[in-house]
Amino acid sequence: MTTASPPSPAQSAAARRTTYREVLAEPFFRLLFVTRVVGVTAGSLRITTFSVLVFTGTGSALLSALAFGAGFLPQLFGSLLFGSLADRLPPRALIVGGFLVEGAAAALLALVRLPTAAGLALVALVALATPVFSGASARLVARWLSGDAYVLGRSLNNLASSGAQLFGLALGGAVVEALGPRQALAIGAALNLVCAAAVRLRMPLVPVEREERGDASGNTGGNTGGGAVRNSLRGGTTLLRDRAVRRLMLAQWLPSGFVAGAEGLIVAYTGTRGFPAGSYAMLLACLPVGMLLGDLLVGRLLRPSTREHLVVPLIALMGAPLIGFAVEPGRLPAAALLLCTGCGFAYGLGLQREFLAVLPEHGQGQAFGLLGSGHMTLQGVGPVCFGAIAAASGTGGAMALAGAGSLLTAAWVLTWRRARPAAGPSA
Image 1 (cartoon, rainbow, N blue to C red):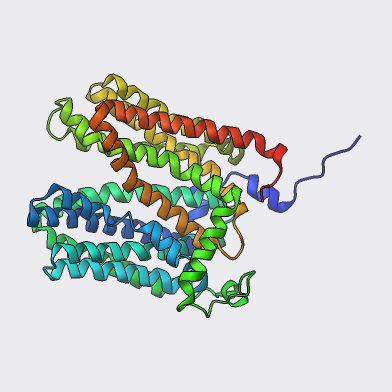
Image 2 (image 1 turned 30 degrees about the vertical axis):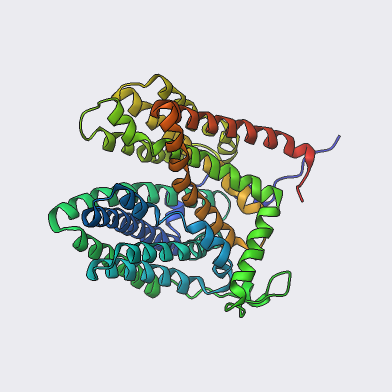
């Protein structure tokens, strides 16, 4: 009769449930967290206010929508072309540079009356560089936090994004009404500059040992000029060729992409149903509120192993309520359905440890940048695809179809997660 060996200290640390307080006790993560909250608020303020500025100047709803999407759609291309820089340059310099670039763009939009095409190009250029900055920040989180602390660190970042987006939307509306769009953009620029100064003064200079050692192909961090694009494309291709990495990225991209498609139809749904004016704002807010609740409940109350077992049910929770829009519910039932859908976003917490474990040692920054840029790209693509479906089937039917897509994703994830132990590690 054999007896199981006791768990190692590393295994015990990974399985132990951590608290948010313990995660925030890490001073450098706390700095990243606070500056992320302020930075996301500034970014939301910049994107929404620029969209208002374009609509005011052109009267075109199409150009206004393009101004909103220009901050998201180019990110996937930026990750593929420049993502390797997140692993090859000092992370503090990248994070500071990211805040400075975003602040400079907001200041330029505020102070100079650029042609609409030039403004759109400026926002798109910033979006191209965003995966490099965000990848460097995510790599530091993985460096400073481990085990369940890392998962809760990602949870806190999700909470920061959801809460800051809500606050940025509210702040943008208030400031635009009180001061005008250009003044709102100037405030966003100032917030970015404050974040850049805080990171520059409070964050240590993290060594770039991985970049200096080079990767498996012999490339070193000194090759950041013409070789950056080549290295980024090769690194991105290597990541996506790995079956485990590819599956885990798709598992995180697809459900949110389907929900984004439904979210993009909320304004049209409230209009076709004849809801009172302003109802769309309440329904739009239900998703991020649900995300906040889901992350708090799943991250705070459940053990790591429980979170990982709930991945598939939570993905299903994202899609099942959207099926209810097939019967075109009223305003309050629709709000309840969207709140439940938002709670399902907590499924991502159950994938974080597994995703980090399959990443190559020398490509984590690029992998995190690619993960984030894929999310952003699908947030732009999803509404376009399901908007086209809505033109043929109606908004309620298209939202229900988006929910069905999330349910199919849950079934796919269940299939390969069940088969994984028997199949062994993927090549």
